[in-house]
Length: 431
Image 1 (cartoon, one colour):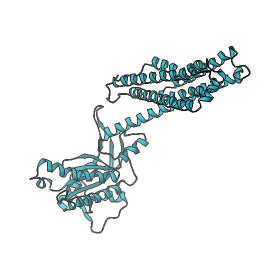
Image 2 (image 1 turned 90 degrees about the vertical axis):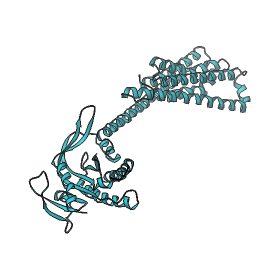
Image 3 (image 1 turned 45 degrees about the vertical axis):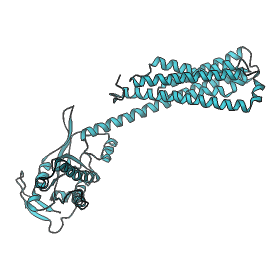
């Protein structure tokens, strides 16, 4: 049992809640149908009162019909209330009571037939719309979301209909009519039973779809827990389509580091609220840019961030996406400053492409998606070199080569010694 309103801990609890909600919907629907049926029959009774008296000796049949429908309405409203109370208490209807309820409801058409047949020929009653009520209860049994209950409903309808036909035939109340022949009513009973089987199939499909929806939601929640707010909805959807696999793997990625230049003197005389507003504006724009270019934000680093292109999903043009994102970041900062949302700022962006190991690290209680490898260290070092070269975007030759982009004229800084690497790297200033 779970606390009302609390998230279910398992699919069983989730499905139990769905059953209770669906059962209440079914009962409510039946109550509405009873009211609608009573209204329609009242109109027909008043409009065709003369025809009614041709088949019924007096008004007793109409009164019986009204009393039985009224009793069914009261019963459905009571069940509706009880289910609601159990749902608020975090409980579900016991299975034996669900079978008893199915038996009571499905027996209503049989009760109507027995009551009305006392005042009219059973032939007319058995051919009237009353018998169609069996089908209504069978159809609505799908909302019980239980194959066995749907089949049980169809079985009850079939057995009671055949039993009534046999009963009236034994009393010789329908001689010379189709009801006097077993194949006639046995065939109709078989159809009712098959209808129950069909309703059970539909109930099974509904249950399966609910289960699939639950698993998708759980997988989506797992992915969001693994990545936090780092991943765009499009990447989450793509991961779900591919099975949600986020196992560790080795692959080529393009890593981006971005930093707000001269952040400390920029915020020296600002209040904490103003500093947060500035960071939110800058990082909000950065998130939109990175997401739009199929990257993920791995972490925010005070006045900067780290993003990755090519993990957890490869696009085949990850370095090109990273280059486009870097240029878009510079343009976005200019736009924010032009709109007066932030003071004029310069950013530094460093990109490097290389092999990395990606995947979740941590414990079962807390995990984080991580990118490990020299490519991360070198991308951070490249970004730091923006200060020395007065640039906003510095990239390695590996990035341009992977992107299939020719170096712009005069962009090369030549071989540059990067801290943490013995061999010099050729870097290019793109902004």
